[in-house]
Length: 490
Image 1 (cartoon, rainbow, N blue to C red):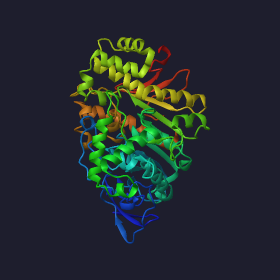
Image 2: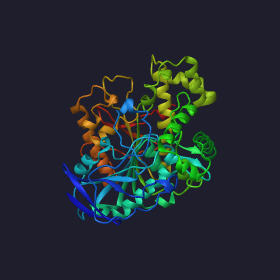
Image 3: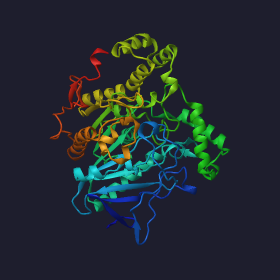
């Protein structure tokens, strides 16, 4: 056992292998009752020693839409969920670099405390302090309804967690001036948005952005307000007090119903997401990043090769899509260029069927192209990033996932029993996964410590620029490739 004194009280954690773990650590007051749909407020102090050896509940949520890709995880849910999980090699004054993890899940599922996101291996291997964040999700985190919620409460939770880290992490052996914010999918998009928020200035120095869908993971205020009004009507609640009284099970039921109503063919956009052009985020974050002075945040970012395979390969409508439906998606994405673009994608993947075509085009349009456009801009602004693509996929999997969304996660955290049933890993052998995981972990650790991913396990990795567009490819063969996406030919 080990105890740590924080600003709110003393915590008792436990040794887990080579590190100490502190679980269920509150960073804000429970968002219950009158605090539901309100911004996070300060931690309520406690007396005595608080047990921090068990995880707290995860945010209320529906079953993950990627459970059939990543695997399913048993969850104890409750609105009292604003907690951290902290892994540290030692409770001392060493001032280790800190990696703060923001999980993905389309702003509607997941938790930083899940076993599959254990930071123990990264903390021990890299001599880091790793912090996983639980934040409000779905309607509880991102409802936008004037008079009820200004939206983006999940983002404000993340901001509160970063402030807590600044004020308390030194007691866990961490350095509050050396924080790297690492996120995947919705978590990566959150990190990108936090880079635009003046309130987050100085709270992190580096960012690792894994698979952010940069243009598909926000909603404009007017659109979000329409959804908020529909939600309130279905709940029979027209003001804050009434919405605070709706049982959480009913909130989840209505969220599921409305998600079905708003679902579109071949579109993975979540119903509840960060709201832009509102009071919390006044402008589109990509516009803000381009027009304001470039934020002094060092960035490592990338995608998987077939991001959308995770969504397409489990959707019978896409698997069985007609040529007309495929053409409709190209028309939606490219307008007048649709026919030429579809022909180009067919040439890229000879013999392609609807599943392959839609996986390719949606991976590009929802993930890759916007990320590379952002990398181009960063290079031109004198703040180049390190860019990667994760291409590894199992030789055999139950579905045609490919190198899909989320597949890099077991390699980042280390593939242990929490990942053994993940369908996306197929029949891959543990020895193969462990070998590439060793490279990925050492790379993420090096960047967290220095802002440069170079390390002894990796070939030299030049920064991305618009002349070479160097991208590190992670596969059975690892190495830098110039213009991996073939932008000069598109």
